[in-house]
Length: 193
Image (cartoon, helix red, strand yellow):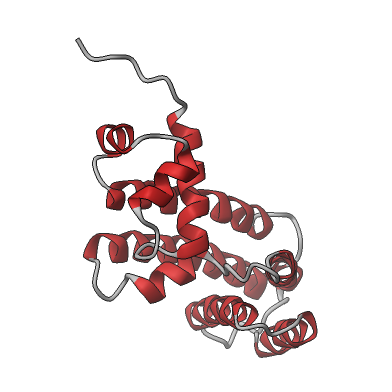
């Protein structure tokens, strides 16, 4: 008869998320995960099957949290341009909060570290990108209908551009670029839209 689990699986995923976010997938050892979660190796492997499975769950958790706040801004009652400004301002604020630890964004970090060589993670990242793309495109199209954004511009291209600007802001902040430069990127992005 199997013994019942004596730990909170969701807390373990949250703790692993922090470990992966801090060091990256490859640099996070099983021992690091044991220390972060407070679990033994056997508990980690019995529950999550592998380090990769635990990472995938942690990445999905991170995406769920981040996308929830993105969608909330994009579905707010603000005019489209203000939605985009609010979204970009959130990025500036988040990067300011993480300036000292320079962890950046787990999604961006995972794209750089894993997407080219891990098909499963690449698929998760692509689905996440498409979710953000569709939400941005819908907000931009709404702004075009309302006259807030030039309807002659390609809404899909603008959505890709905003995602690229956000990714670039996150990488720049991780490299040590300060708030003033990030705010300049926000202004330039909004001017382009």
